[in-house]
Image 1 (cartoon, helix red, strand yellow):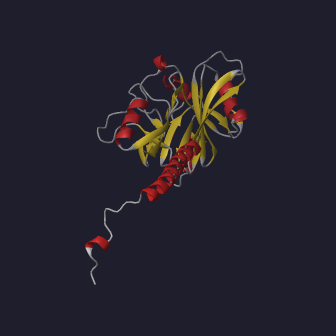
Image 2 (cartoon, rainbow, N blue to C red):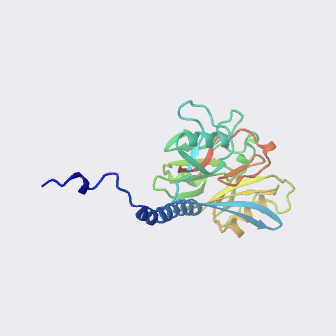
Amino acid sequence: MRLPARFRPSSRFRCPALSLLLAPLMLAALMVALVAGCARQAQAVDSREHAFEGQTYRVVSIDLKREPLTLHWRDPASGQPYGDINTLRQWGEAQGRQLLFAANAGIYDHKFAPLGLYVENGKVLVPLNMAHGNPASGNFSLLPNGVFAVYPDGRAAVRTSTDFKAEGRAAQWATQSGPMLVIGGRLNDAFVGDSGSLKWRSGVCAKTPTTVVFAVSEAPVNFHTFARLFRDELGCRDALYLDGTISQFYLDGSGYAGAPAFMVKPYAGIFAVFAPR
């Protein structure tokens, strides 16, 4: 039996009391989602200021279990180098990705190409460089130099270039730089405690296979002090120097740390942590 129209429920029926009840619940759900998203980013990229022996450093820890650490040199569409962190950030935004962290990834040559091994998403774009003692290579020629690598299983490591070659293990992402700062818990023998060679310096270690630690000085320091920061303050058994003078870190929401803007020149490879927007 069909009910008269006046007794049939209307599709336009609204209950103000129910709407008032649901509104706080929807708002609470939205807040939970926002807090969860912020917590995820905060745990993936942890940025802190460290004071060590009268100097200040920006130290960034990356949890590889939460967000991948990647390397970027050229725009895959145009083939043009990104050159700077802001260009990479804008590229990420166009892909619907938010740049949480970025840093220049090591020493490069006069043609703005990585001077040593460079692996991007499993593809070797520059082979391992085992040439030694070339003064034109600057800090790269200070031995031993080394490789920072993230492997296909998502685990990271810092190895001397000799050890990396001997292992023969394919990397998913890798950059070669030098010199090594810390080797098996020992400072590089080439470093002098009272050296007057003071520069802004950046470096990296894999504190655990899934925890990568970056550091950049906020003022010029020598190699010996910078290496002791990694060993004695950050607890790294193997650490690699990335670059000096031009080194900067980008931190989402905080801007840049490291060398002043007027010192910065175009980069080759750039480390990045992206998250979906």
